[in-house]
Amino acid sequence: MKVCAMREVVKRYKKVVALDHFNFEIKEGEIVGLLGPNGSGKSTAINCLLGLLAFDEGEVEVFGRRVSPDDMDMKRRIGFVPQDLSFFAELSVIDNIRYFAGLYEQNNAKRDEMVREAIAFVGLEKYGKFAAKKLSGGLKRRLNIACGIAHRPEFVMFDEPTVAVDAQSRNFILEGIKEMNRNGSTVLYTTHYLDEAQELCDRIVIMDEGRNMASGTLEELIDLVDPTEAVHLVLSEPSETVLKMIADMPGVVDVAEDDGKAVILLTPPGHHLSTLLEELKKHEIYYSSLHSELPSLNDVFLKLTGKALRD
Ligand code: ADP
Ligand code: MG
Image (cartoon, rainbow, N blue to C red; front, side, top):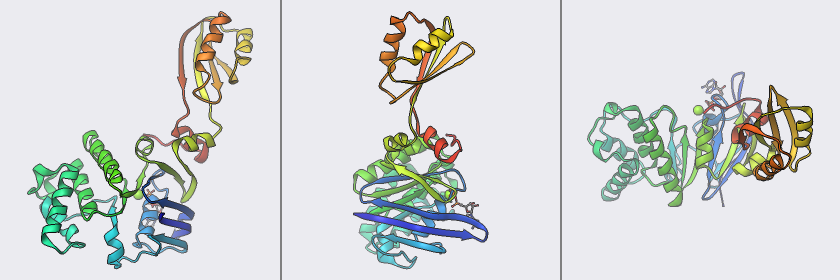
């Protein structure tokens, strides 16, 4: 079942086209990553989905209809963890989460159970009575998450929840999201970190300049870009003859020589390295070092957008 969709959505901020005929959808049970550099339109897409931002063209739906911000039945089913921290600095951790859970749950006992669950979920048990403003950056991020998910939404959108957090909080957040997903929540996750998209998401949408450049599983995306495995060999005795011999070996699509080093491209990736090593031995071609690089999401990103996305 489809949880949300955006079709041909255009959003302009005066002259800036933030979404340029943007399309994408999420099915029930998926963790979908929107991966793109700063300014590519990730937050704009989420804000349009939530009905927080008006758009110029196209269609948006969540659970089969357009969201309006005062549609409480709809909002009860949706969780949103915004990019900018949004809780009350002066209130305690517990009171903040209680406030947000209370928007959707009026029964005190049920609400308090939600608060306990959310606090445990983000590992803030020791900080319940702390004023939010007293927390470290990573713990504030965790509180931001607790406020967005306490009401046990079916569909949760996380907008770059790990920016500027320490490694421990980051792992906590990613593991928590996986657990929410195992417990049945569908997840939309925006990030400009390749490794997070790779680790967390069932499906990745590559976004650039407001457009959906490609989407699929990691394997599907890598297949899109004519993938090769690059084997770097430092040859003991480089020569034209040696390079020619290598070029004829199974799986080799290209050999280039650079200052005594051979760069050998193999395709399909991950299949030919052991044969290559046997062939080199058989032909008595010797080398002092070797390493192989399999294609990565970074290669896909570079090929599709012309930009490198740094971790
Ligand atoms: P991301 O979340 O991927 O970093 P955004 O959705 O925030 O990207 O921004 C997409 C584009 O829209 C950027 O060029 C950004 O500068 C522009 N933009 C975002 N919000 C505004 C705004 N309120 N007014 C004008 N331009 C904006
Ligand atoms: Mg953003």
